[in-house]
Amino acid sequence: MSEDSNVLKQRKEKAETLENSGVDLFPNKIKKENSVREVIDYIDKNYNPVSPEDKIFSVCGRIMSLRRMGKAAFLNIEDMTGKIQGHVTRDGVGVEKYEIFKKFDIGDIIQINGKPFKTHTGENTISATDIRLVTKSLYPLPEKYHGLKDVETRYRQRYLDIIMDSEVREVFKLRSKIIGIIREYFTQNNFLEVETPMMQTIVGGATAKPFVTHHNALDMSLFLRIAPELPLKRLLVGGFERVFELNRNFRNEGISTQHNPEFTMLEFYEAYAVFEDLMDRTEELFKDIAMKIHGKYELPYGEATIDFAKWQRISFHDSIAICLFNNKKIDELSEEESDEIFNKEKIDKRLKHYGVKMHADEPLGKYQAKLFDLFVEPQLIQPTFVTHYPTDISPLARKNAENPLITDRFELFIGGKEIANGFSELNDPRDQKMRFEEQVAMKELDEEIPPEVDYDYIRALEYAMPPAAGEGIGIDRLVMLFTNSLSIRDVILFPLMKPHQTVSDEKKAVIKAS
Image (cartoon, rainbow, N blue to C red; front, side):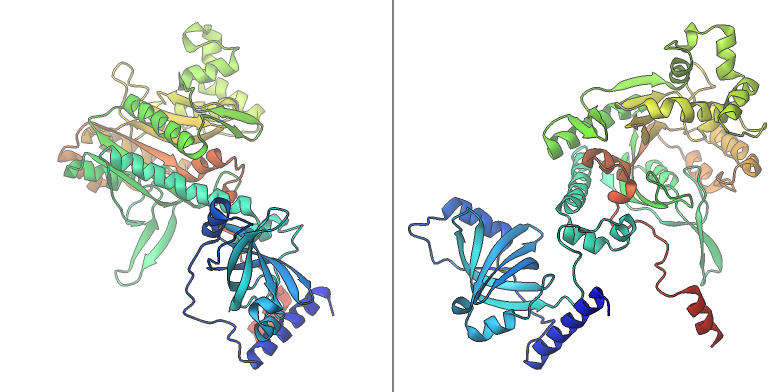
């Protein structure tokens, strides 16, 4: 029998012994009087070893370590607020309860009542006057000093990851706090929080491959939304001038350290604003988060230090020119150098050298976007707004008044990755209809292009949408930045995983055949 099997056998025997002696392994109606943090704060503030008070605290938590010494034992008990030592003696809790306690294991959730004190080594401790089992752990925790080292196990059994690693718990506490700060920022700036449908009849608002589902009662296909943009802009038409939504999007794409098919997005729309206003607002929001979370603007991210007090703005075409031609901007290039950015054949030749294949019918902007992905994006470590994207890859953005080949659009890059996308909204229904139809006509070249035009959205624009600007911010990537997490899976509680193989393929075949 393996060591694991022995441990499980011993746990089962202990559990049976406890039940046979009348102990409920999973009791109900357990009232938690105090948190561990309350006890620690009380000790730090009030404990006097010369004349200790007889104040009794009652805490509930999980046993994380246990050292037995005959008629006494020390244990560490942990709840979501912290960890504290417990001192349990036979004299303190009585012979009968101490015998029951001897059957407790690391991982069990218990309730301990007792007097707080500091040991001679300065450790905060509860001297138990009573102890009881709250929930029996039938499976052992990972070994204390090694924890969960297997990455797949960490993500698949996130509950163990949270139990064993205080830094993991802290990441998700910070995630919750960050989302709270975002909500507070927008509500204080008179934005209305709304919810729009997760299931949509027409794909729109972004370019991505959707998940398809089916509604049986209506016998119709539906799509899990790839973006809430078009419903939110319908609300601008309806008269809600400032709206935001914090919710899930779904994109049927690959999984990586930067992508999860289900992710959280903030989108907000502001009437009578332009894209420059949203860049200002974004700077303000990120500074607010940095200061409230860490109390400073300079934060580590991987091997870099991100300074949220310093922001750069550069045009899309200038950024490519600077990276390809030794810090020259577009208007400083020679004719030959300019062709390397504006001639599809020249771009295609460069892209092929890097193993990137393009279709000849794809628009120039798509070629330029590939140049940007290869040469520019990885270098954008400090907060940088890249502005004025080509019109042919920005179907929902307003054309620039001086140059209709570019739009009043920006993307925000930090740490070498895209964090946000925003623009002055296109509210001319005629132009929007034409651009949607041109986009759909390219569907055969790109499966991520929406398969049909949302004519109901065009009709909404015909009722007049005020001039506005809108932005989407990826919450998961934002949390990665502010928690120094290099994989998106480290900031999503339950990232998508393949089902765990608990039964062999041969056994499945036998079961199916029988």
